[in-house]
Length: 397
Image (cartoon, rainbow, N blue to C red; front, side, top):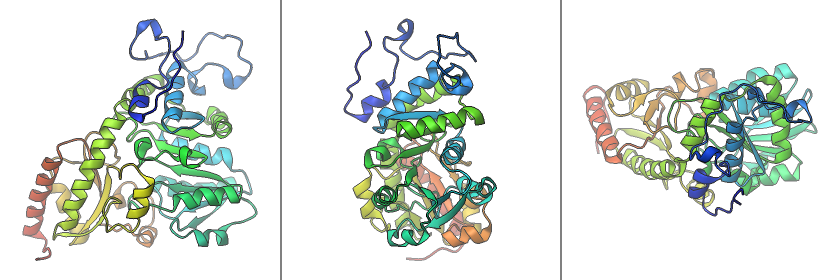
């Protein structure tokens, strides 16, 4: 007889929510159902036919239940990538003649899609300052249908007035959409705070092992169903083996993120005190402009930070060549620490002018904290600073 799920804490939910009950042939792990199609059993519509592209194989369904449980939502959906989750959501909810309000500092791929592709579908947009709710009304139009923000912006780690976003959306009958990748379901659960939809690049923290590309949509059942129907036709499905790896990764999400929260805060404090560092962006620092808001909203400040060095781009390049533990690579959220310059990776599609406008300099370094020993990372940074000091002048205390 199936067990009733009544898990109170997220540390238990990541392991047990959504798992088959009874277990399939007694298997503790959900098997990989490597079958493109399944025997028909009286499905009522095309979208109910069990088929990999329709995201409804046993491996998909386990993830959908688990993800919905993690954020206290009605339903969830996995996709072939984070961008598949973002683009399909926007194209499912917006039509020709519609308008969307979008936070002005976004992941580069999202920014490019909004600014370069939405117009081809007859959809218009306006950027908003997420820290200034009084200005949003001025951007509102009769055809505005949604508002889109990030929990913590990529890569500047700004924390918008998320409570105001929810209130504004409700008062104007807008769909509220938030990219929750940086915060993860451990630190922030948007549906529990009133957001209609929470999106993730599951490539990052949800999977946590840098070995798959995936996305997730979590939220209201009616909206998730609408997005699934559009996804069924666009084809951004997740294959069963990737589903298996994602499910396995989620089971350690709480352990990983809680450690990364602690490690990132310690590293951010170290960088903030270093004479060679010009600026550190991390919401856990008391000097962060939205620190109080982040403390009220989040259960942890996350494993992402960014910083600028005295010496700009040249100093950043030398610093990244000198570190030995972090891997110089794009992406984030894995067990390995990753370091990159957004101007050449995640936000390279933006013009230099657009990057400068929102504060992304050519020398900005984004650092994704892994699960290595925090002291080892700090020691590695220290030797990189020593190398830097030989080549680039730094401040003298």
